[in-house]
Image (cartoon, rainbow, N blue to C red; front, side, top):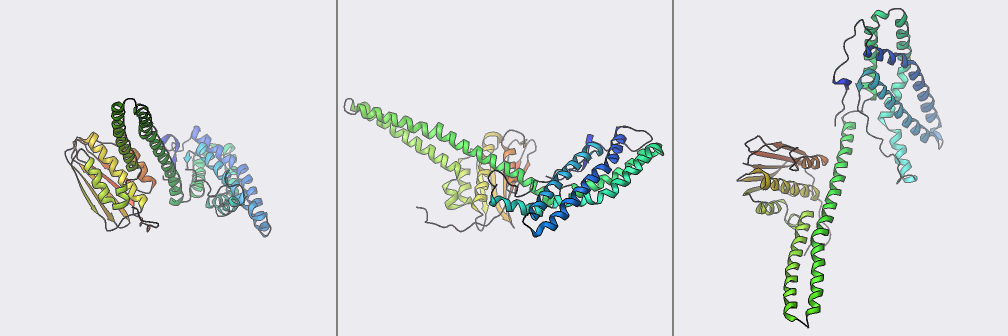
Length: 402
């Protein structure tokens, strides 16, 4: 997510002219409101900040200052809203304050993170600076605009445009998100929501598969064995036939449980790594797949799992939608990145919004600071490149698996 500094209506306001159109009147209203609002903001910061600093030798000083800075954040939010409404300047809202106390952190364990994050909040401190330096500017703009309305009103549109351009620069410079880091924090917060939603969807899928698959089959198996037990003495042949059927049901239930376990985290991936796990996926694909994995070591288990399921879903798409005769999977490491490239010679034309799960894959990779690039011209070939951060695998501890 990047900060957007643009104007409403997707266009800049028309150039100033000898006419009082709606843009000019909005700018005049902004300039006239500068004095009372800048006076109120100046009084607030001059009262809150020095008082908090002076009282910092007491117990209430730092909490007072942190609370005052939180109030300064609200002043900045109001000024951004005023700039949007009257000057047509749109500034992204900064990311929320770190360490804010919630329902789970209202005691002492939540107070100190809130206090520290409030005291070092760059957004609040820049708002304090904005309110401090804006009082003389507010007096000047109010005076010039008031005199202009009665003395040199024919050229007031030009004057108003010049004065409000300074206001626009102040808002962009001091009230916009801090820098790329602020935008990155907001982006990571959004990605965290994607990860949470994906995890919840996976849990629902596992629950559904257990309920509708293995659980239902095991219930039917228990009932069948119960009936066979009742007929064991009276009709041994029928009981034996029912036991044979139950034996077949057991095999199917075990296969469903294996498939479910493979969908959660396949044992071959844990035991033997990506090379063997991807070869196993390729062997189940309806299209012949060539797999090349060139890795000297193994990445972290989480990254390895994401890579596995990415390739698995892409090869399912190849089987179902591509019409390809061959496909290939290449995996290699480039410095601190793990790269995956899947290519097929199918009909092409795949899109991120085509309903084949490509958009979901792109979101999942983006949530872990990865990249997803789709190149699929009509007529093929289709090339998907996925990139993940390489994180070193932590040494395993505990007893070895049997």
